[in-house]
Image (cartoon, helix red, strand yellow):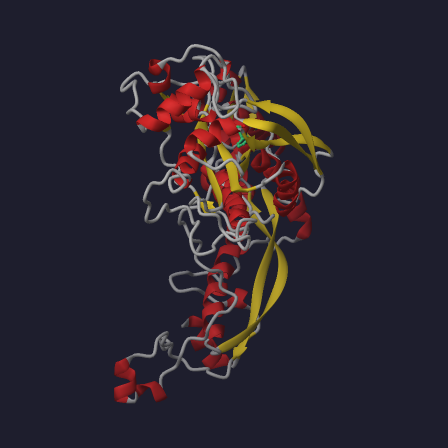
Length: 525
Ligand code: PHE
């Protein structure tokens, strides 16, 4: 209102430092006053009631010490104030002075008060020798505080800066003129067109607030995806665009049967020992698997079958029924493959939920003229958590995520697996991959997959793969010509590389900062 009234009276404001703000006696020369004025100018100019230009100045503000002097007086004035007048009281020894005004003020104040001839020594003590003083330093501080400068000029200001009582600050002041919508009364502009305004016709004469396209949006504080979940989403997309169906992986607890036996992992295999696998104590045993299938699995282990000699090692029902935290998601793949083979076993299934109906997968068998054994090809994947009794360090945790893919079709070969891997990893941004023969109890042949990492500039192991053994597939009921290849990769490693993280604990667990999760970049392979 002050700005509008002044403009109305004088036509323009040449220097906003000359305005006297409501409730003040001095002109608004200080930095703080100009900030207040700027707020008003912005609000008025957004309604085009005024326009203004900004002028830069250097002004001064008080330091902490300066502010204390403005309030309590200079050191010398404080020393002078506590001393008795000469001949009127007991002179105060310097030691006592320190106690009265503090060591710092006593020291600085004495020196200056002597220089100014305000005090003198008497015996071992100090007394004042003038009855009145002008505390110029305090007056200067007050002047700088309210005007941002000193009438005494630059030399005096420089001296105060040297004494670190004041500091320079960039300041602004403004020149103001009338705008196209100038008026002396501020109308609150409308921000919304309402039904009332339309029916009453008031919309015609109302003033409207302009859109501010420069305004920053309100920061959202919704949830944020964890980096692992972002990478998971990208990998999931690769699977989906390649025609894979997602397996249900919600059962963290599995039986030894599904996690190991069904996959032809011998019951004596070291991976099944306590130091590698977490077993459950309550409940400790699983429901019995389908009896026929169970018998076929036990037989192929103990005595051999389907042309295999088996392990020729004792079979334990108790071992097979132990409950554990799954050590790989291949336990789920085994479940799903068993389900996929249901029709081959002659069982009636309406919908196996595997996405194997109505041509969602495109693999060899289609077009070849399906045989009458009930088999349908399938491409399945999962990405979920697995648990291993590992000793934890910078790169290992007792739980991590596995990415797993399984392809079942007639006549698949190792070349299909290798070709498939090349396509898959290329989609993950890894063009250069190599394979190394490896060993898994459930696959033969088995291949470890290495990728040349463009950022790390070296070959890193990225996964494990292989052709599932007939000892695993045939007890499920698959015809001999159905081959299944599969592979597993970790989710944590590619995520750590992606985000340049070297310690797993900054990615997973209680040390992860929520802020780093919220600020983590999006992932696109
Ligand atoms: N289960 C294997 C692992 O834990 C991965 C794998 C899956 C290997 C399927 C071969 C076939 O590393």
